[in-house]
Amino acid sequence: MRLISHYGRLLAVALVLNGMMHASVLAQQDTKAQAVKKSKVVFQVSDGDSKKWDLTLNNVKNVIKDIGKDNIDVEIVAYGPGIDMFKFESPAASRIEEVLKLGAQVMICENTMRAQKISKADMLDNLGYVEAGVSQLIKRQQQGYAYIRP
Amino acid sequence: MRLISHYGRLLAVALVLNGMMHASVLAQQDTKAQAVKKSKVVFQVSDGDSKKWDLTLNNVKNVIKDIGKDNIDVEIVAYGPGIDMFKFESPAASRIEEVLKLGAQVMICENTMRAQKISKADMLDNLGYVEAGVSQLIKRQQQGYAYIRP
Amino acid sequence: MRLISHYGRLLAVALVLNGMMHASVLAQQDTKAQAVKKSKVVFQVSDGDSKKWDLTLNNVKNVIKDIGKDNIDVEIVAYGPGIDMFKFESPAASRIEEVLKLGAQVMICENTMRAQKISKADMLDNLGYVEAGVSQLIKRQQQGYAYIRP
Image 1: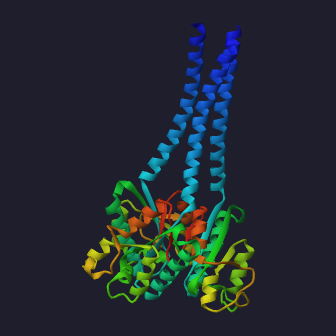
Image 2 (image 1 turned 90 degrees about the horizontal axis):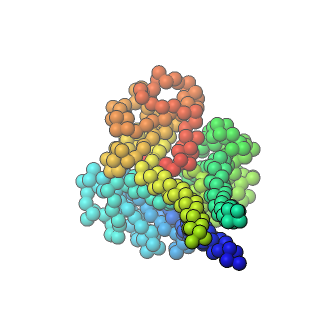
């Protein structure tokens, strides 16, 4: 009798320990599943070509409409000749305001700004800034963002 | 004697339970390994430039030849000015038929078609269609497809 | 007394076995954490446009400066019209030597070389070669490299 109860207790210990392991593995899978649920995408703007800027803004609007504002994080990273898109006098200014209102983020490369000798005062409002646009694109991909280069 | 046999039985239980955990971890690794075995790649065509179309078709053919028809899933997603590549009168029509026969899939953006007021009757045969080309590119990357923008 | 010591021994066995499982899971996580620590990026050069080449070289230099030579693996894959960047007479030759010294690797597409009927003697020194540039870009992305197409 005592032996059986003893056996039972030990089995219980083994089961609990294994249960803890299993729960920890399941928790990891849950986190992955949730990470997949919200889509993330980073758009690269590196051309000084206003047709490309329009295409990019169309892309951003379509993807937010298609996947849903709350189901996707959208970031636009501009560097090199692409930062002209976000300068104060940009022909795309009003359409940029529109996508910012839809929740898109914009990140401007400060290396490019230094090379062009321009400051934040020369840029549109409500933009973000990063040291190097390319490093931001790498970081985002490592965080699971899809990459689109229009 | 009985204690030893009892000890043995408990040890067996612990070993079996741990073995099951281990097997489950190994099974996950196997699935990953298999997922890695078959390559997957999505090509973006968003330029209205016939030289780019030729380069893309060369890329697709080379990659299928190099990796092997059965070892890779290839999808071409066309949107914006890129959908001209797949219109009925496209100069690339015969070469497109060739890569379709090699197993490549093509997905056309219906948002772009609506904007250009064209229908499937204006397009080549054997193409697939998606609501938003960019959403498809995001989805494929999230599914582990490599992304190539020729 | 004997039963308690027996109980203790069995518990110890269960704990050790579970500890081994746990250690193995933690070891996997460590490997992942270390894999994340070192950034990896592959740049695609497929345009015959010397402005793009300069932008790419700026990108490579900025990213090495920003993330640190020892914290990032940088590879440039050239194919199609992009291989002109690495020909012997390239206007970018001295700047390419500079990024090679910073630790960047260059891979040239041999399919493109055959199509252009050129040999390694026509190319700059210290380059690597792959059968198909696009296959290399796919392979690198599957190995966790971020992809940048300047």
